Length: 441
Image (cartoon, rainbow, N blue to C red):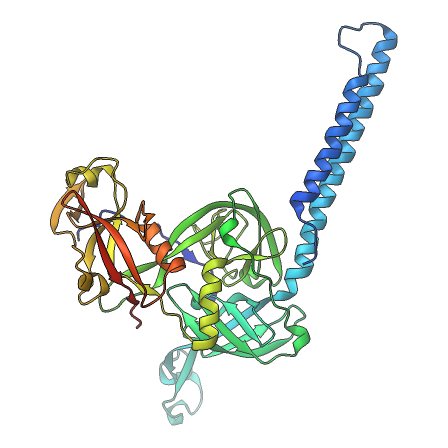
């Protein structure tokens, strides 16, 4: 089978499944900053009284020893203060967010087992007289979720509750209640389940602004890895703007879709963290943990979270409509590379997204976009080139395919008309496309 010109990195969704027969806290940055200023001030005053190294008298040597000892002691004290401030901030985050995160257990029915075919049944007296019954079998899964509002709406991952015949939600105090799926969106891997619980148990999260994140900021994951409830791990935002494949595939066209603007973190994320929260140092939710990159199936220091800006768009629609309609352009393609540009007789530094295929009857076909038709082999990989190269949407530069996915997800809605700038036969032109709704299964 021919390979495409581009491949998608494999990731693992992080639910745990087993076969069964049945505001108001201090910002860490401000704390550390003030402590550092104090430490620096202390260091400067000490430097002024420490004699130079050229002083060789016994008295001066003793003086230097005392002053250096004092400086070391002050530095240790300041270091202890910084550590204490950091620990206190993390403890405050956990005290606030811990009760907002829940454990989710699901059961889903699988193929029933024929009673007559169960090994050992023939040894039971009267076996021949037992009716040929079928025993239902179940998969049991564990994941995480978080409280969205005081109406009993709980957010989790779609892959946690997909196909569930029974859902149980356990709160931080141990109370367990049944839940039903209110809405689900496989394309963003988000779902909302509904519980009937007392108001004092429903402590909603505070949502943060994931658009302002910077690599290096503190990231804190809270969830139930391996079913271990209320686990907190700490790391950093290690990358931004990742694009990961969604679990849903269009069965009619075979097209796959991606979740854009994904947050990468080195905070430990493991099976069971799915649907839990990734929060900042203020305890605000900046993402929903949903996948890891791992050869072993456990944390390798690369976890992924659906960004808050996507969550804020999808979840309200799931609550009100039970679904979310994704803006649909109706193309598949890949990012331009120097080799692809050369194959199309374009400058090697050409940036944009190459349109390779267009869905029949979709918005792009109606608008007159042109797909790739020329077969090529680049570095031993077969593909097609020659289609339109999208370089901008509504005047916003497009550098790669991920930029298109992100722009559509954040800045557009179904029925909106957008203007594409495209390179066709070496010439720039504009094409207006009215966005449709992404096909559902």
